[in-house]
Length: 67
Image 1 (spheres, helix red, strand yellow):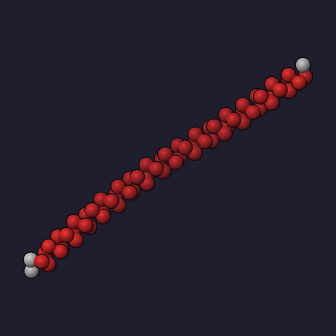
Image 2: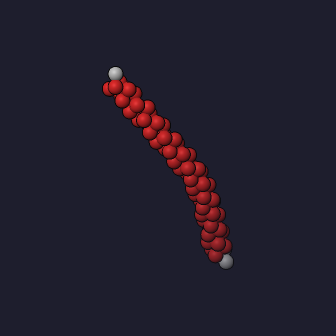
Image 3: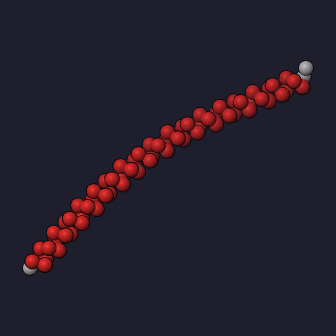
């Protein structure tokens, strides 16, 4: 009987630990998802800047050819 009580106690303890770890992992995943959104937006901005610079270089090159 005591063994059963100890087993139940350990089971509750382990379940509590696993639930705590799960919550920590969910929080970590949420933070990583938010960071991913931020970095994706930054990447999109940098890509747009690069495309604009590329177009500007093309215009400058064509202007020099027409001089």
